[in-house]
Image 1 (cartoon, rainbow, N blue to C red):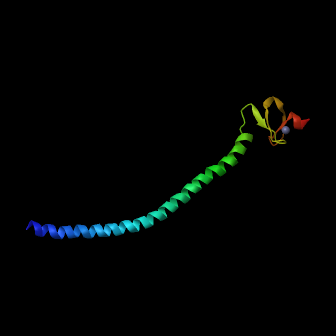
Image 2: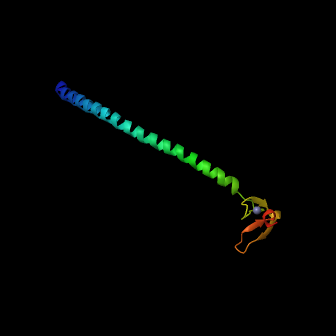
Amino acid sequence: MATDYDAPRKTDDDLSEDSLEELKARRSDKSSGVVDEDETEAAEGFELPGADLSGEELSVRVLPQQANEFTCSRCFLVHHRSQLAYTTKDGQPVCTECAA
Ligand SMILES: [Zn+2]
């Protein structure tokens, strides 16, 4: 009785194991595609910060401006407030060097 019940069960297990292995094989095929996607994503993530960095390094160097500093509208250099000659009607600061 028990043997009768066990026998078909084992066959069932074997069958599902077979299909599982088939699934696994298919999955590994798919996973290779997923890996490709990950690589593309990783490459993009790697490229973006690099591109951002070069662009940011430039602006961060020129633009950071303290409260006591200003960027001359003519030479575009950051000067201390004490070097501010005047401010144009548009509110553009001009340093003493450019005003001279
Ligand atoms: Zn200037």
